[in-house]
Image (cartoon, rainbow, N blue to C red; front, side, top):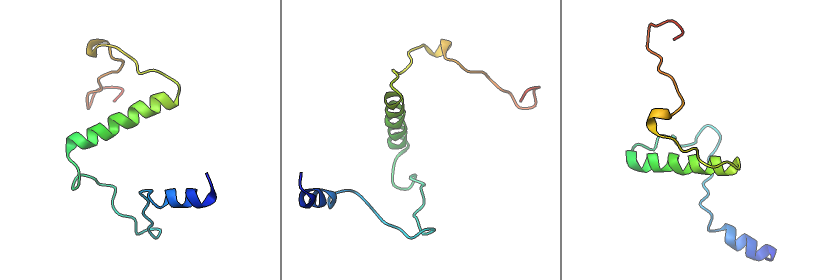
Length: 76
């Protein structure tokens, strides 16, 4: 691809430029639904696992790794 073709292709990129400190808020709640935001996070999660060269872990909810931390209890 020639430099001219690459420059033409870049014109369609969804890029916005802002002065430092004048960036818009990253709060998407006014422009997206909760479902859309969850979908974004899910796609980023899948991307992260693929980028790491790993497959998504598969386990049931009952066997998920984790722990419950209750407020006011030792170790909280």
